[in-house]
Length: 244
Figure (tube, rainbow, N blue to C red):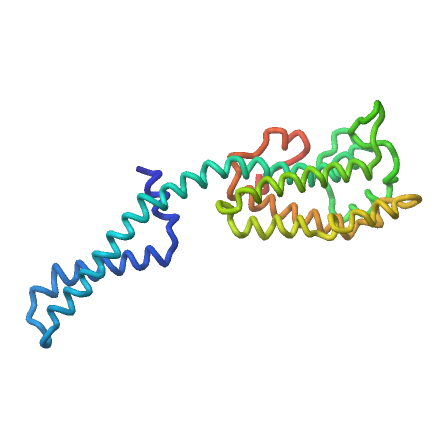
């Protein structure tokens, strides 16, 4: 019963307003207006016309709600689990751009403890070509550039997986993911690669900072819509829901 009530409240507001108007029109005509003298010739016929229109809409709404809306809501709930996991994968990738850098000096450092005002100072310490990243290939650690490329590739894969379910995705989520996909950080990553020699990561601080703002927006959205689907590993890499 609670599921049906929840589904009912998720119907578009304009459809619910029309339903209430139709119910009010039909009931007022059949329970009250038909019992009073007609105000003018043809008033009864006009009243019956609007009463039948109201009944038609009520019948159509019931059919739509049972056959279309309930199924769509069920499909949306099922797809939300998959999409939620993918969204938290993007958030995890975003945190992993920074947390390993913090852990060079403090092994217990977590992304949630990052002071964004000190982001430039943190990035200024990092040699992009230093083989210090927490990923091993060919029996040695990869560079930070390779680590960033790996996180970007993972993020883009998550976004592509979500967009395959486009029909069931909230438009606000589509906007957020599109902004991430087209962020300056991702679009200009080749610039970072070309200019990494004899440079520090702080040359990319504005792009990284703007990207973290997008990740923060996505976190707020996920906390509201996908909280029950968050990866348990997020606490391991430092994710913490806002407001806790």
